[in-house]
Image (cartoon, rainbow, N blue to C red; front, side):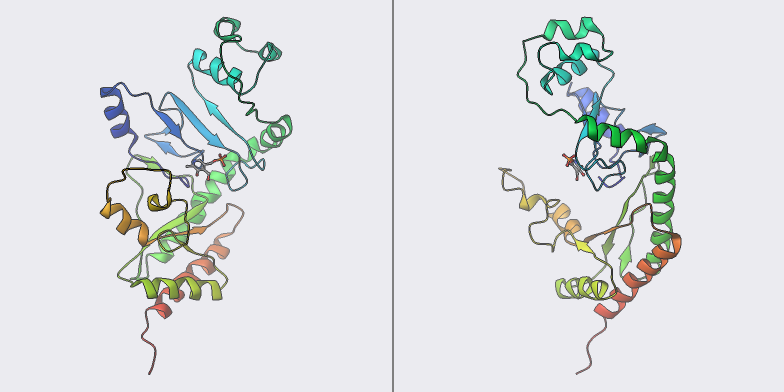
Length: 260
Ligand SMILES: Cc1ncc(COP(=O)(O)O)c(C=O)c1O
């Protein structure tokens, strides 16, 4: 999520022990590395999004990657390669032929237009990683000066590719957190507090389709004070300094008792 990764060693260890195949939802973490290895290449399948907020943006679309020819063949056919349309591409026939007419076709193909838009951006990837991480780390260092804000450090094995910054608000009441959001907006910076934003899609308690969810009190407490601010790679360090100052000032103002 957002250029971060979980502890992939632990996830692989647990899943390997239980013979569970790992599908990495790396939709938002293209370029992030774990122990020097690209996220999305550790599990059996990696998925990346090209939706408009992502590092590579074709408006909509995405890809999955795998080194398993059989799985790739099934995915391509199910994406809608009907009537031997897969022969138009350089693919191993022996992996595809056994699946011909044996699978449902969901028609979730990435369009040629989206693919062409993504290809043109490939030479930009390295610069976007570099500038995104520079913006993140620059902003994080300035935010850390505020006693009200903590930016969680990366895990030692993690090299992030951020397009935004997440931080925790310390010791603020819900009213102070709401005041912080308003004060930041008044300074031109949009902050989302995951736990306070109505209908936020990152909070498990808004996933009405989940059943039997345990209380997860520790996760709820963390999400309730987790903030998110976009920091696209096109911003300059000077832009990021202004954003960081707006946030630290907003935190100071929101926590100052009002004069009677
Ligand atoms: C972790 C994660 N998974 C999935 C998605 C959805 O990607 P898409 O809109 O391309 O389906 C996103 C995008 O926000 C994401 O961050």
